[in-house]
Length: 307
Image (cartoon, rainbow, N blue to C red; front, top):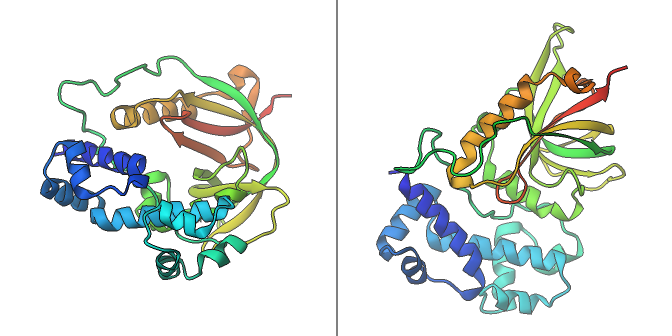
C-alpha cells in the first residue's frame, strides 16, 4: 500500500513543476498514468486535501511570495497564478490571510502560507526488490567544523518533545511551516528557515538535572527587533564553533530513514576530545539541517577547544 505514498509525492512534485500551466486533474492523471478518480481518491486519502484545494492553496502561497519579494504588478501576479483578475486574488488573499495583497506588500506580516507537502513513509517500508540505501552508505565519520556567528532564533520550543516526530505530533505542522515561510525574507543566511534542533534546560527542582527538548523555526540576525509570530519565542544565541556530522545529498524517498539514523548515531556517540574539542551545549543549542536533495542531512553540535 505504501507505493501510493511515493506516487502521491510524485504528484505533489509534478504540481510544483507545472503550477504556472493551470494544471487540471486530467493533466495530473495523464502524467501519473492513473485515472482521474484514482489520482483524486489517493491524493485526498494521503494528504487530507482535495487536489483542487491543495492547488488553490499553493497558487495563493506562491503569489504571496511574489508579492513580497518582487515589484511586479499585483494584477500580473494574479494572472500568473491562474486568478481571473486582481479582485479575485484579493478576495482569496483576504479570506486566507486577513489582509489585502497591497497591505501585505507594504508590511509583510507573518501569515500561514500553504506549503508544498512532503509525504512521510513508515520506517520499515522499502520498495520491493530494492535495498534501503540506493546510493552511498555512511560508513566512515563525516565531520567538519563550522563557525556560526552570534544571532537570534525565533521558534517553537517544546521541552516535552525529543525529536521531529514527537514535536509534530503535538503541533500544527502546516500552520507553523506556513508562518515560517512567510518570514523567510528576514532569515539568517546560515541559520535559515526550517532549521530545527535540540535545546537544554536545567530542572527547576533539581539544578543538577538537565532536560533536552526540541525546537523548530528560523534564525535572524543578532540586531533583529521586528515581529515575533504568535506562539513563537525569540532567544539569543552566542557565537560558537560547531562540529557538523553530515551526509551529502540523497534520495529522500528511498534513503531518508537510513541516512538520518547513521548521522545521528555518529553525532550522539562521538567523543569530541578525539579532535581536541569539548561540547558547548550549556550555552548553545544543537541544530539540525534536513534538505535531502540540496545539502543532505546534518546534525550540528556546539564545541569549544580543549585547553
